[in-house]
Length: 401
Image (cartoon, rainbow, N blue to C red; front, side, top):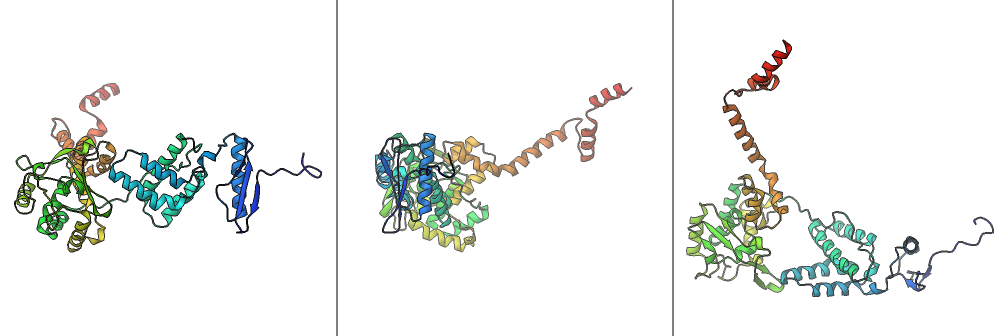
């Protein structure tokens, strides 16, 4: 019944303005208990929209008691990281993502209070503030993983991280260097780093793998290097030598033969002594650290005239992978050389095989041209395509006759 004389429509929940000017909202749910909003609102309209959302959930039967999820998200995330069986480097990375990206936005919020709209707004604000897309994607993936566990623990009803593609960190296309650029860079670093640049490019080893390489890992007779460990750098300057991150990363890579003499000279003059001595060392003979080498790298890039590329040391590996792809390496061969257990990374380099594909087409064409009775010129080819083979033409002539 509506119109004049009808009883006033009952509004879902109630609003109250606090002395601070903020608005407080609360409602009575199907369990008969009053549930306040997990935080106050600056504007009455925002509080009203929150009540409308809660009313819709109750009406649809989707309402979920938020009481267990009132624990602050920051506390829950801290426990989540602590309880995971993680490597030291992964644990440090997760703690950094929580500290820098998730805590400032949601740390004081009740875990159950985080909604889809809040996650969308947080992500948009991070991107608009200049945070790199890959970092935002990593933080989003961690938030999603934590809240998946919150669903399993009964703290929340559904995971609010439902943004399609938000967890995919598509980094900008990295530069691929020419061979001239690579050798120019190797000439611009100090002599004890020349082999480091060349090996990073032509064997596609990561910096951490190169930094932990031992003399016993190098077989000059076979022109091979064996990857058995990787060096990671932790907070406060600590280094950690650990097993490669996957079984695929534990591999043996063959180097181009022209690098053998280069590496032999390096081992004779610059590597640490003994079979277990480090192949690449720091300026004082100690561990080679990425942070210290960065100054050397930046100076070399500048001297080589490549500063405009925004070049990273990891781009040498990218260049090496590209070279392997255009040399005709299959996806499986690329995976083995790169040290990856899945095809995803290797397939990135398959786009680089267009010149190789052209060479294959030319080789097929040469076989066609060299075949007895096959066309050898463009005109003959056109006639061959238009008229078919002699057998086809004879058949049509007979039909016409």
